[in-house]
Figure 1 (cartoon, rainbow, N blue to C red):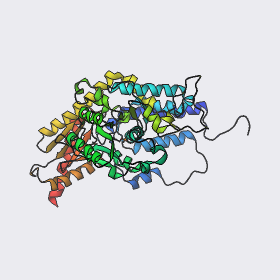
Figure 2: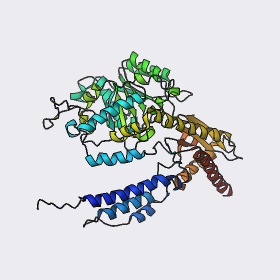
Figure 3: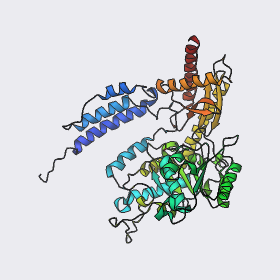
Figure 4: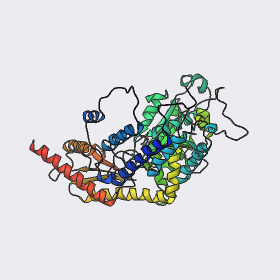
Length: 493
Ligand SMILES: *Cc1c(COP(=O)(O)O)cnc(C)c1O
């Protein structure tokens, strides 16, 4: 080895620029034409494997430009684009261009945000981002928190903070089995599946979870919540955590947060709000009442990679008193000498969450917040909600569509052929299930599904700053068109 070491993954300045500019050109082209492409090519796994080719593990190296070009072809020619204006499935956002560039910058400096000494500026930016996210959704900027990979991990992180705060201190040593009382969690029926994973993974078990029925408006029935808590106390258990939802994943309903917070205060319970999808809508002045009580939460999960349009991945856990995060996650082995008393570089994110080495997810969120400003976000989120209402209204007017629900930016609807009565759920459920499949493979408009009171529905969630009124009109036409075709085929059989 000489001082001029050769390494096969390095790139000299000129070849880096050449490959990089070419990539940027291709991305710019994609962003410019994304609406004219199919949402997805709808290929089978076999077709995809064929496109990928069946080559074995490379033994020799290849030129960077060549393989990067091929990767770009593969990704651009065979992907589902959630940035497409008619992508309305699930809750995955159209990604911000500035977020794309931010990820490149973050990877280039490669700050390890686990320790502040390793990521001096990145840690400061993450702290500021957490504070801005709190202020954006209208809670105190004193909430602390951490950026994580997404909603699931944001909720897990809050769950563990809640447990550190409310479980008896002996748990740290003896584990859950050393506790005299079982720790009980309460959540509405509409809660996302993360909670089932959490109680199983963290050792509480499914029996420790109380699913509280929802009322007629699909909010948690808080009277039944209170009854369940009182019953558990009488039976010798320890209630510790109540979860409220700010925008349920299926239909977008926000629970009565104020009422839940009162119940939690009365019984000294941790109040967690899952706002993975809906929390950013709290920034809209006209929705102040809907989110009343948000600022009472001990912890809030939100997902910048949903309604703040960050490219995957970016979730965030906010905790009213961040000490509960360090209580849950801090353990300092001797080989970490990270507290820099003299310089004040002592905010080490490895003590705030599950990860040790961490990337710099905050950068893309921090940049987008500055690019849009709070006002920009208010406008984009409001427009998404307006478009969702428009979809509901058009479905409602159409004689072959049934508009079912509309909350925040989620609308559910179903296709009902002219001669089929709306109570023929058997037939309509099968028809609409096939319709979702056809739409998801067809590439014209991408919706997902929801089951509402036994009715299988199409579900549209708009967290997409590219969607326009024309896309909504076209989506209606596409749904009706495909629905008719499917119905006709079935009638012929
Ligand atoms: C999407 C979502 C989650 C899960 O978030 P991921 O980012 O997919 O991990 C949890 N809760 C709610 C309410 C959601 O909408």
